[in-house]
Length: 610
Image 1: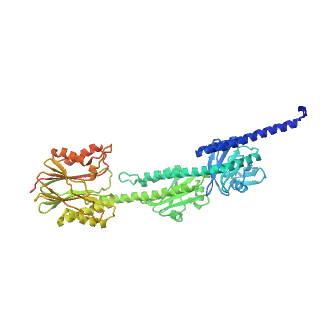
Image 2: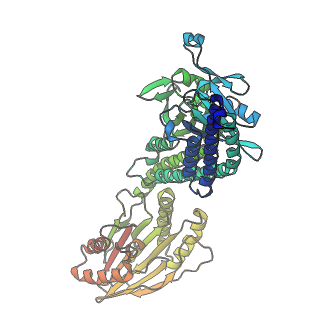
Image 3: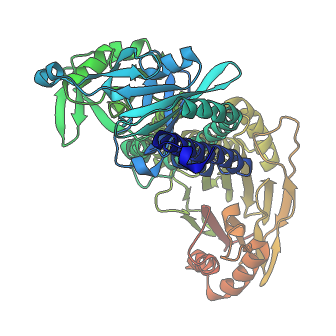
């Protein structure tokens, strides 16, 4: 056929074929790029960015969205940057949106959102919109808040293992001709992406769960942090801790206050706007209580959710009831904005773990505060003291590692006995608080009684060991130095039960009292031995707890027994008065004023022997 034989209509048809072929080549080339882009993508976020951008570019669309299926519906997991200023539904319930239609049909659907008619405009209600299928011209009424920000779009189900695992929506913000070939090509892309998206979904969920576990651990550590003075730190910091959790969950934290006199629950809205809740908090929590806490789900169909909507507040989230702590009811709401996705399984597990930690740790702080006061009351009546014994100069000192220390287990006594005799005791009970204080009190009372009975130190400690094994938990034990001083005969009989060896200074020479036995209160079948030291006038003995020799320098070196012996050798010639203060000064200088354990020191000088 000659050139002149072509009609104008032939030329138009030829041009249309070229346009279609060019478009098809672009689509196929774009589809191939999508496949190639996913092959070497190890970063999930980068995978989404690449795929969504490629799809948008390939089909000349204004934007692309991707949703992932979960147990409760489809959750938004990606959107192109071109839609950053658009209102996008973050969650679609099963059975309430176009995802149901796409899953039922099993392939990509070409859809168009009809403009509101005059009646809808006159009524001022655009809560629902009409969506039309391009292939069948069927129309459906869909809630406006569940529609993407497009006038025309292709909804593509992504299948894996016989289930729709994802929905991809490719759209145009103005009415656009939706071609069947484009829908078929998107179906082909979706079939390939099924495996990739399933892997991405698994990776995303694992990453999200790991981040929440890490945050949960951090918040637990903050709750358990040591508090200063008499402050109940975990209780006071509850709202701050939960605010951090709310930020991570993209939710609003609304505290609930309970009027202790009338029992009314009051919700604290933003701006300190208080609203009385027409619900009994106990009744709300009863059906959802697990051990000591309750997590009450909130949605738009629940009575609590409907009341929140009436208040103009979001109605998607959870009410957390921690129960009564420190004399007040502790409860919160964690609410997400309307249209947001509900909490998934990982998020609910995070909330439950944090709620349990909050309850247990805060109650623990209350219990520890009560224990501290009880322990202080116990110890105030059993203060370490040194009785006046003729012929002996005695000094004792106790230095706490921290200004806010609770009650420690270190204690000492000097008990005056008949016939120029005395009993010196130094002990260190493991632990702190009520149990340590009660064990310390029991030990000192028992040893005082044994001393008056005339028992030897080893016999005293052996009897005490049997007593402690029945008195306290197996993990509570004590180290002890018990010495009976007989000034008339010039002897010191002692039993050192797991305690650091006492230092003895005679004629300017420093040595240790080396006879050692095991700790007290840990084992039933342990033996205890007596040691004997001869005394001369002017001899000096120093007793100390392990906080002294285990003190560390900033470099980590221990002060040690040698360091203490050197300090004693240097300070004894300077006189007995002020000796213990000078030894503490050595410790402070060595540790740069950072003692990590309590220190107790007792110095005895034997002035009249024989």
